[in-house]
Amino acid sequence: MSKSTTVMHEKDGIVLKKLLGEERRQQLLEMLKTATEAIKGTDLAKTVGVSRQVIVGDITLLKARKEPILATSQGYLYMGNIGSENEVERQIPCIHTPEDAREELYTLVDAGVVVKNVTVEHPVYGELTASIMVANRHEVNLFLTRVEETSASYLSELTGGIHLHLISASSSDYLDAAVEAMRVKGFLADEQ
Image (cartoon, rainbow, N blue to C red):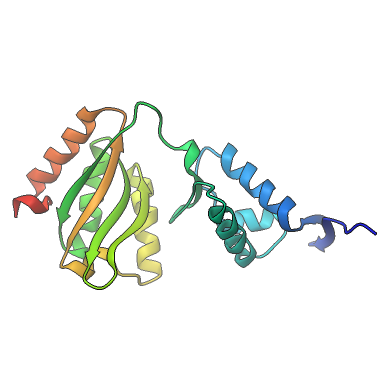
């Protein structure tokens, strides 16, 4: 006897198809690959008829298979969709107080770069890197709202404000402009 890969369930008077296991993970992967922006875990959960926690588990399994999925404050991104062959990157050393995080991120995105991540050097754990993935002020605001709502600390608070950002753009001119803007505002660590 073959086991069905779907289960039907009703929500608000509508019969929904709940995908099981591998079929669900393949649908999630296809949704992420075709998305033009990050998809929130709760939206993925609603689409496939499971809980947010099941989505977290599915994403973990997909990442274990080397799928380039990134969890950001805006949702999940399939990294195969990000960037281009012409993209250039640079890691820059930064320093500021937590109160200056918004100004720092605005300075970078206003120069036309994407802030991909933040890295700090922890005395016990070594290098710690976390995704940011913000490209404009709206995304910066969403990221900072999430930090505030969760009462999370910035990684840079572990290191007295010193941290690295990986930034990217379509041209090194944008990277140069971002670095110069950071220099003018006193946010570059190598100039303190």
